[in-house]
Image (tube, rainbow, N blue to C red):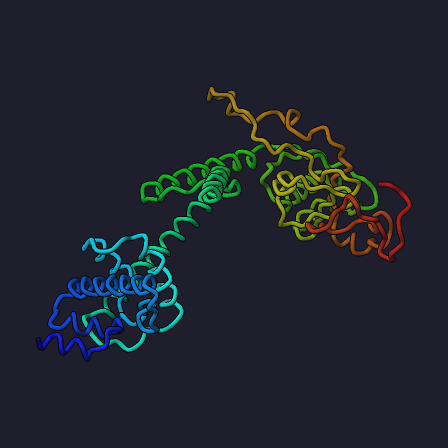
Length: 379
């Protein structure tokens, strides 16, 4: 009886929140709340359809349930509705879609109940966002897969075309003490071989015909020299020959030559005065040329081939007529008294003589006298 009286004064058109507040008192689990909410929504929809069919339209009962006031996602409600088996999916589908769109456009109102809906909504929103991002990433990956394959193929081709730098030499091996000792031994062996060859060339004998010159050519004969001898050695031998022959206009020429020293004599090769401190090997090995492009001392720089036997006959000196340079023109080599040269160096041919300069290129030289006048002859 009390229930009938209470229902008589209670309004029949309750809102969704009011019905939920009466049906969810004492609930603890979120699943129970979703189940009750689905039942309330289904009940409201049935009442709305019955009121529309009966013609008794009321502003409160004819309105569709406001799902924006529920405070929980609709996908959970739809799941609980299908699990409970109440209502038809064809009628509730369009309503749920419209409610979902309306909820996305407007902010939800103040919630009357709190069963952890906020956390559940955040988790579901995060899951939906992650799913949509995964779908977009997979779509982008599918669209860019051919290009990436092409890039990978082209990159592989480029890597295949890369070659080693040809300008880089062979990478040196690790140098050990044994390798250093071996290299030093090889260098020492080569040095000794070169020194031995050099000494063999220097010890080779040559013949140098010469003349004494004091305004006229005086035959002096031929002296035996070695390629390693210095110029002053040749002048000393020439002085002895001059003392023996008594070369000169003086009455006591032999005594005059005996008193003269090598510093009082000069060696003139062609028109070049050769200083005393040079050896013949220097001009031979460097193939030094003088005026006219001719070599000053045209001798071989190779060591002679010696026979393997060591008989006494081989130990004797060879005949001077068999030596290199024996057939040279004697007038090419002049032994001149320096005092005579100082008195006549302004007179031809002494005016054309010049001291040897190792830096000068005599092949392109324009010959001039001491006054700077150019000579008008080739040699």
